[in-house]
Length: 193
Image (tube, rainbow, N blue to C red; front, side, top):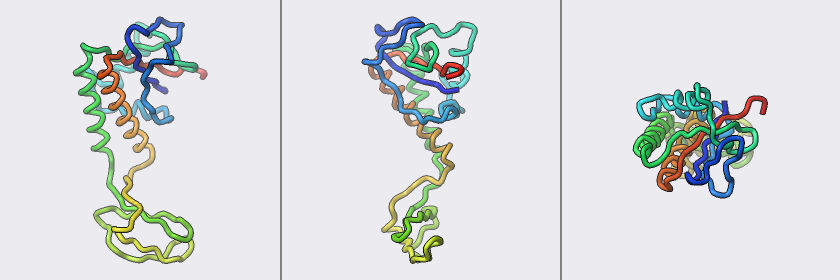
């Protein structure tokens, strides 16, 4: 299920079937993977309830969402958080999301590239030392000198990287929405879109 978060000024909220205004809104840039947002909320809580369960309850509960849709392909929106009463809880959720992202960031590695064929090589930071190896593709020597690496990258699976990216985006989005005093709305993709 794909979720879409939007924050708009409280006086600009409209009832469904109208669409939310697009001129004055704040949205996080979330990864295009459907499960990334749901997995980003795994282990996080909002007002003593699992954040993932709160999303499901708002969107699939007994009382259907009744606020305007954020755009084409999405259903009506539900109110996820509203300042000022939800401000402390949403800021705690933002902190928790960033903490989960840091915990799941994975091991760091230094990265080099072969100057001939551009094959990439990564070595965990703890194991990095100056050595010369032959490129597996072209046989050209590659100097693995820690001082001349292309930089550090995380050695995690790509999906976990998308989940952590979603966590950072959502944390920043929640903080900005609360700083502006705007309610946070959530909706889900319509079936068949």
